[in-house]
Length: 331
Image 1 (cartoon, rainbow, N blue to C red):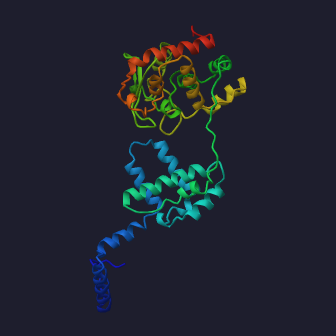
Image 2: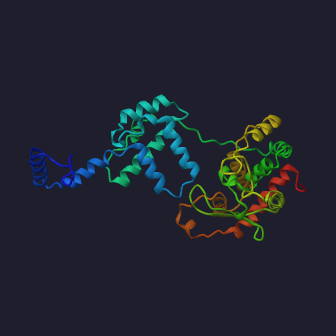
Image 3: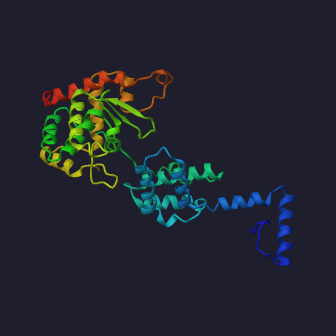
């Protein structure tokens, strides 16, 4: 559609046709300028939507946003420059089936959030084509991981971790076990996030955006304090060769521990191990939620303020429990 405010020179015939079109629309109570904007909005592409999403969602981590970009480049690159309104449910169903069970669901979740974002930001009224997967029930089944280091496995795991050559990897894995932090949260931990006087650490960039301050058990405090004496030249508690300067998941160390013990585990399994041990000690429910930085959905929970000091005793009890299992309280 040609804008009635276009500065391009028009022929007399074009001017007459444009005037007639504009008059016709106005007779139908349709503003031609608004119609033109709506037509332009419908041409917003998938890649443009992702760019605006990254600009507006400032609370998301760089890792999460990079993951969305990777998904688009890897699995939806041929759709990137298409108008997002032109992606049909049939296209979604076909692509979902083609990608297979390991990548399809995650890819379509990214597409779903981008379509929702486009609808909200540009006032589009697109029927999200990903919703059709639920209607025809073609999502691939997903099983929640329930793996963790069991009590009888922990002594062998502990011994293998202490035999690691890398002090950074060793203390990193122990930190995950004693705090329940997510891998990325621990990797990005800076010395400025550690309060040695208060014996706490603060995680400013979390999955849900809520700042988390956790007390350090006496055992972990001593480990991290010794690291500070050795590694205070770095910005990070766990320096590494990653492009940001901090440790990236120590896969070689995980492989070493698995080879030595036969225990298959991931960094996130240590988070599950932490909370499993915590729950076995009959700690208060709201303390468990706060330790994992999970928000409470009930009204009562919203009124309960659990600060770092109230978590100090539960954290110490969990640490003592771990050290008792490993028979390593004097290390």
